Length: 364
Image (cartoon, rainbow, N blue to C red; front, side):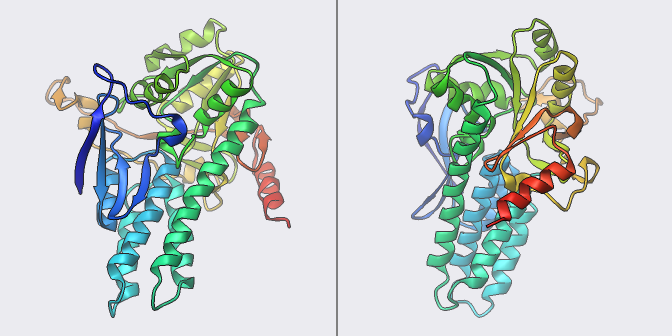
């Protein structure tokens, strides 16, 4: 994998990138270019992946994160697998090995498996003598549809907010977490364009600080108001009555509407319900996993203890202390006031309501 710096931001010259041109992932001539989200906002650095295993490593190492962005990245990784194996006598075996590596890179985000399933169908249907162009077209189409779906979600979700809304977000759900535009942050963008947004309160989102670093960077770059708060301050803020809605994304939604998202989301949902604040989950249909009947069936990723015991490589906890570093938690559907998708809004989601929504999408 190759690294290269584009420029410095914050503390120097702020990089002026309109949100609609921010791309966490791009297909370029010599591979897949990923905006390295581990070093934002201090540095704007890109990583070039030239093979499927390099893409998988970048996903696992959090160079790219956010369920939709992971799905798009995996799709392009599948294309690299096809390109690398082209013309070989064991083409399918080599591609399958690379797809398995990609599939294992992050266990919770269902968009990854969904995207790879789409790409497997494209690979199977592509001309055997030259599968590359057809597979590339499929990957680009998946990316384009993600952006289009985000815009539809944004418009639907904005209708749920009052004028000059004050919203609370968790983690990063913007252009950096998707193919472009964003899910929950896409709702913020659409609302700002339609009736205005008075303030976005962004949870820090420990331990990777996706809210403090990434959400804040997107909003500041775009000129939208943002206030960062410690994760533990959310309850006190909700109690003041200053929040009109909590907006979050999702990494996997069970068939009954239970939602896995960044650790801390469940606590926000409980707090929002206690204080009478609407709690909205914004995610594409591809995030709904029919194979998971409930949240109890969703695999929850745990990462290295050092992510909690240290900060930027400097240990701040005593030797001998342990850490429980679950990356996601599960919010019961009973705490979700509305599920916003590109195909429609489901209020108080249940298994039956989600089935009806999916059936309406499949109906000609």
